[in-house]
Amino acid sequence: MNITPGKLNKFLMLKLPSAWLCGVRVKDISNEHCIVKVKHRWINQNPFNSMYFAVQAMAAELSTGAMVIDQIKESGQKISMLVAQNKAHFTKKATGKLEFTCKDGHLIRDAIQETIRTGEGQTLWMKSIGLNEEGLVVSTFEFEWTVKLKSKKG
Image (cartoon, rainbow, N blue to C red):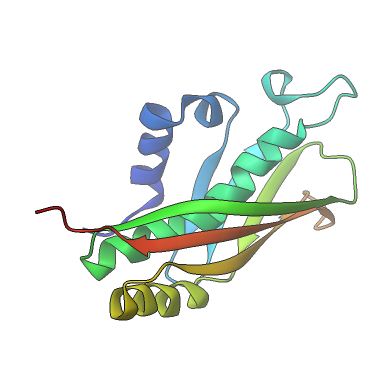
């Protein structure tokens, strides 16, 4: 069973309702990239009439984490995932429709294979770039994901 945008958006509604209520939605996902969209609205704005940074962070994190979830599922192993660190850079006021794109899916498979092979946790940095409707960068996020084989309890 492949992860699809529809399944991920349903997951958001049930498990991450704050992201769903703020309008964060997966638009496209593959093993190599993920695109998440969000529109500036009253519910996700800051006092300066632009999108609150945390909403941008939710969309950006989802664009990276959805691919990690998908590739863990494909591995057939029980693997935990966690954001260890993140960095953000804001370059333009976030208004209108935004798309956050991560193209770092190729990094995930190696980290998962290495954690399965060694039993040791692995880390990888993934970048998500947020563009407005004009194609201008409004923010860039980097997330350090950790993946680790879950221990077998006997």
